[in-house]
Each structure stands twice: as structure tokens, then as C-alpha cells.
Image (cartoon, rainbow, N blue to C red):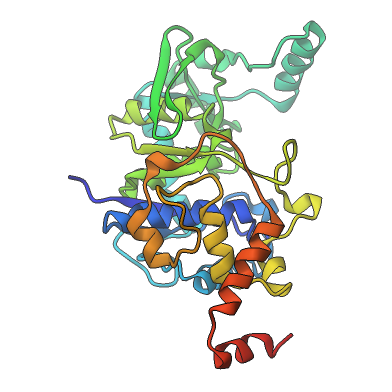
Length: 341
């Protein structure tokens, strides 16, 4: 049986969002339950959104909650580099190979041409899906235009007929009509890969067996699979998890001023209580037990018990749990813990 390898691949864009931390925790538990490897990869290809010092926040958070990675930028490993911007030189080769295999094409369209199609779709009241005339250009002609210095992107090629399906560990079998899938850009005109493309290449190269991510990616997963199939690569096991919500309607989000991990710690919540609480957001153990150490979570964690429904973040429940942890401390530890406050 293939070794279980999961990865936490955050973008260094600020504080650690509670939903992100829960994804990291689930990935860690899936790997460790099977004596597998847990990898940390920094996804910094979206250069505009990078925040100074955010990589340190990722390291500090993981350390504070005890999610120790087996491979990563700071400790190395056999599958590095573990920072996407240090892997840039290889994505273009993969993109060119995908064009050869018929899974992508070179696109020379300007923003104006794409915008004109978008406006037309809006005026007709239909959802926009770019119909790219460039996919009818032969590879030879496209290469000549590139050699002549024309700007281009590499865009996925999707045959309009047929269906693509995948099996998800949480949501079961999902089938999608290929005609509904848009042909996204894989390599931008500046040579940077898009998040979607870099992810596939890195996961394949790092031999990731289980991909855990938010259920908002369910709709793009069929497109990823078409790329895996074009290369003839093994498709990972997918675990799509429901979002963490503030209430019935609103997702937890830093933009709306919802607490990050750092904010909660500042308010006096203990890292181990936060981790224990978020483990139970969207996942249920078989027993009624609610207080778990990380070691106990590793033993009992089962993917099959992840819920399909969104989980609501309840600060009162976290406060109760935090109290349980505080009361269980020795007087010395309690004194050390509350002294800074």
C-alpha cells in the first residue's frame, strides 16, 4: 500500500484563519493515523497578496499547536524545494508537455477580447465561459508566434462532450458535464503558474496521497483530474471538507473581523483548547468524549466521520472547553500561563 502523505499548503497572506488551521489539523491526523508523512509547503505564487512576516506566523502557529511537519522549507526533505516561488523554473516545462499531450494550448487573446465575450454573455444573461479561438491554432504556428515575441498564456483544453467524475471521501461520487467546465489559464504571461496548475504539479512531484481542501473546490476538481489523466498520473484521494461558519449564512472570515488563531490566543484561549475545539468542527468521534489530546485524536480520527454540513463556530463552547483545560492544569503551570495577562 502506498504511504499516506498529506500536505498543508498555505499562502503567506496574513494571520492563520481558523478554517485553514482546521484543514491543517485534518491533514495531520489523516497522515499520522496511518503512520504517514505530513508536509508543509508554502504557496507564494500570488505575489500581489503576500504579507511581510506571514511565513513566520505559519511556523509559529503550527509549533504552538504541535502540528509538527516531517518535511518543509525550514527542515528540508527529499521532495524540495517546499516554497513554490523556488520551483518556478519547472512549471513551464510541464505546461509545454501538457500542450504536447493535448491537455492544454497556447492562447494569444488580449484582455479586451476576453472582456468583450464576458460582456456579451452578461447582456444575454448567460453564465460566462470563455470560448477560446486559439485552441484551433496548430502547435507549430503557436510556437512560431511565441518565437516572434508574442505574449501568450497556457490555457487548459477541455473537450466539450462527455462527463468527468471523481469519488470524494466526504461527498461520494461527483459527476460533471465537461461542457460546463471553463478552460482556465494554467501558466500566466509572466511565466508564473496559476494556483490550480502549480498545485497539481507539486502534489504529483511530492507524492501526495490525500488532498484535503474546502468544498468550494469540488467544482474545479474535475478539471484537475483531466490534467492528471493527460499526464497519465495517479489521482490522489480527495477529502473535501465543509466550511467553518460564523452563523447559518456567513462563513468565518478575517475580512469580516472574525477571530484568527492569533486573536484567540491574545484573548487568553489556550492553543491546545483551540485545536481540540476545531477538531470537532465538522468531524465527530464515535464516543461522547469531547476533551482530546493530539495523541488521542490521532488514534481515533476517521475520515468517514467528517460531516458534509457546514460547522458553526461557537465561541461559548470554546470558552467552556478552555475552562476545562485551565482547571486541569497544575498550579505552577496555571500561574505561568496567566502571568502575562
